[in-house]
Amino acid sequence: MKKTLLSSFFLFTVGYAMAGGILTNTNQSAMFTRLQARDAIIDLDAVYYNPAGLNFLPDNGLFVSLNNQTLGQTRTIKSDYMYLNDGNYQGKVSAPFFPGIYAGYKLDKIVISLGFNPIGGGGGGIYEKGLPSFEYPVADLVPSLSSQGAQGYNLDAYFKGSSVYFGYQLNVSYKINDKLSVALGGRYVQAKESYSGYLKNIELNMGGTWMPASDVLNGFAAQASARATAASSAAANMEPIITAGNGGLTFEQAQNNGIIDATTRAQLEGGLSELGISPTGLTLAQAQGAYSSAATSLTATAAKSTATASILQDQEVEYEKSASGITPIFSINYKLNDQLNFAFKYEHKTELIFENSTKKDFTTGFTSDGAPVTQFPDGEKAHLDLPTQISIGATYRPVKPLLISTGYHTFLDKNANWNGKEQLLNHNSWEFALGLEYTLTEKILVSAGWLKTSTGATEAYQTDLSYSLPTNTFGGGFAYDINKMIELNLAGSYTMYQQGEKNFLHDIGGSGTMVPVKETYDKDVWIVSLGLNFRF
Image (cartoon, rainbow, N blue to C red; front, side, top):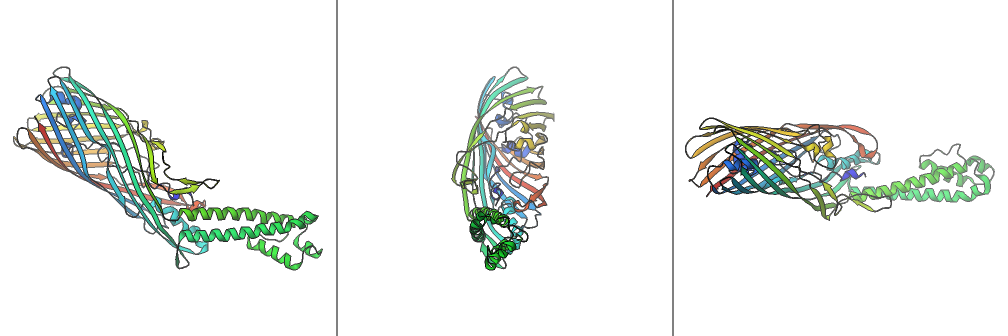
């Protein structure tokens, strides 16, 4: 059994990024959910979206914004691999609590602000029947062992994962003049991903009888070992005859010369035939070499079958990996007049080096000396950086009740370190957003927005566990001033993903027989958001 049986089991982040790049979340407030374009907005969530814009808040004093988003995502994967029992797979990802908390104090030209939010991840996912990559190697057993009577398989696979990258942000904003302000800040990112799951009850239908797959392979190992012993014994029994100088004789010549009798000849020739070797014309030395070579090959086959049987037994995994890093942040806000505002924000790459903490692990193979190779070695480290993010935005108020907001973001994914996977992108991901907000009364405003996301993921980048698709998100909602100090925001959004696919050649059981396989990927995400803004 190749290492691929388990090598893909837990290699993805259970994240959302329905707004944002491949790893980065930018849906960070209820106000964002209802507008989708916050890059140049002067409001309390500007702590995250436009720190320099906080200087243009109308009043000095303390402000606080409390937000929560409840999110649900469905991931759908299909495979047309002919030997799968069922090529349809679905994962449910949920995040009942996705907070965005912001606070700050404005005093004339200076604003000091704090933010807390899930800058990446933020959800937990469950795959009740695993994924194609879990099942391919097990399904391969059927064609690989068809000559031994294999007719079908069963597999019980389960996966559960959670991921969250909490960001703790601090900004200092300074108003240079009536039009221009700047801000410097930083975010401390604390990331953790936790995974658990199992592969159990792997069975094979052998000629109509269901058997544990490990028992089947152990049986093959025992047969191969017995045949290896027999071949090795035959080679050893021939040694005195060959040492006596008769190695150049054929079996017929050796019998005619009285060196071996008819029974011995029949046994030796029959043994070769059972090994699939024709004894006709072979000298005794060549026959001994054939027996020795077969014994070596059968011993290796027995060892491989034993190792495969071990991997096919029930296995569990439980591990987590964690990392931390710092994100430098710089922003500029230019307010031309009361109608037109521009903003720019630069977030530097956050270097994250994850380290495994493993309680239970899968055995995926064995070294040449028999030592087990595990999937997630305790203490192993790997890079998964949050990429540099550049945002620009503008707002325009053509008439007092109406606000038009737009923004563009790009994520420098190709410059991040994702352990080489960044090389499978053909361009950096980007977003474009457009939103409209209208004040109905002194207390109520409504808004709606659209966000387009483009990803640079190629077919080579995509896997059933980690795929990135272009999206269109539509959101809307309202804000209500409860009183002069408190504002309520309620909003919802829905993200539609463009279906993706991957075409590749699958090697059946490591045999070298390649068959074409197509996987298709889809998602959808819904969000309901609630926020309260306080001005003191």
